[in-house]
Length: 360
Length: 198
Image (cartoon, rainbow over all chains, first blue to last red; front, side, top):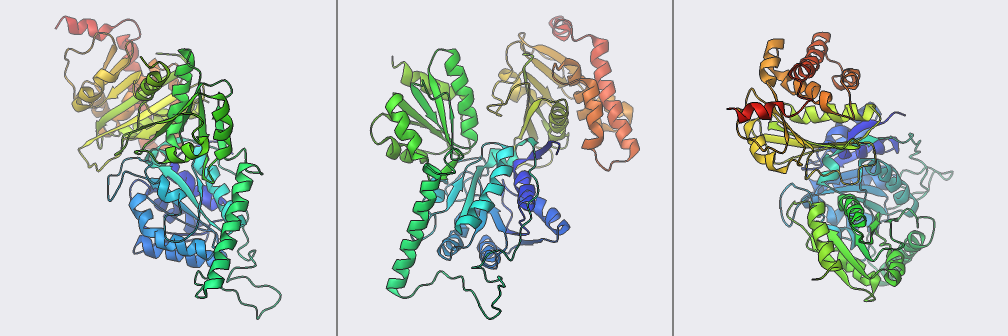
């Protein structure tokens, strides 16, 4: 298939359709509105359902319903809207219903502004709603990956019966790049044995999807079951089949200073690394592509060879905590961030690297 | 301007079609086999406000798609010159819409290219194609896209458009391209030397 020039938001929409998603429920908010706009036009063409719900809360509960019925379903929003969805996401995680949730991050807290930001890292990787739960968090850094990770996201959510969060930002949502769209998947809505809509050989059998466990012992058992599932997922991402998918390394082998960033920041850091190398500074880049489970092992390994780490985020410092936990005090971990919608330039980051590498 | 990569900021009033102009250049780059990126400035903006976008054309993989130091600024209105003039790389180019931007003392370390885009578009009978006049003019300078690439790309960009519209778009490309060729901006800093004499 020929390459198409598309906005990140639209690429997610088209990839969702190709992944077999036929249900979208959402509510408009900048900078992700191109995604519902695209699907409002596209889903009816493939006999899908698009609903602009009365609110974000309603939308996420519609996702809960469709996901329980066995459909591939998604919703999307930007930061304040994702906050509104947290109750529903907690229920969905508790009831183990697969779905894809897209967050095109903008500046917060509160209504903040509509410019790009990365300040929802904690909300995304620590559950976000109430209760002991996790969502798998994918962090694309190009329009191509917006498409690819949408498909991976649906596959992961079905495989683990867990909500998957695609964590992007205003730049990635708004920018256009060439995309190779993947091949369409056939998805059979009657393929999930646990789903309400499943019709097996026993016509009288009925399923139930719920997050309510009034009995203490039952809820404890359920919570440990979820915990074990999260352990399995963590293992698959840290040493199993998703090990290579979870993280990208660039020129790390001989690097003295490791720059760390995800999403759009990782693209800027790649430029910074190139400029550092031209100046004779041995810099490398680690880019987590999956934010939960966090790729801890890479940092454990590089803490042995590199002398320091610089984490760069469009926040006041959130992922830096996970990097510090992973490096575990073996090497110093520094932070540089811009917030409020400003994307740091390669020059200002280079300046920070200079200060760390040549402290005089 | 490096032959490997061209970083462009395109700016103007909302409604002048600068985002579309950026898309035309990016799409043309993609069809010419180059790596491309396009980022709009987006904000709580309205018709008559300012709009801009950043486009990168590159032979290599594009690391950062953000343009902080543009090789070229294409300015459709005066506020855009004020905003981006100082950011242009030394040795870079300021291509501006001289229908709306009067001659003035610009920087002397950049190439200046004046295109009376609105006048050319009005001559063609549709003031809305001023943006595409600029696209034609830019293709004369670009080392990564040619005039023919631009022409080849057009039908895909204005899908469903009537033939008259397609024709006027093509004419706008051609006029912009020819204007640059006639003025021989390719050689030296023609416009700047004219300015010095003002």
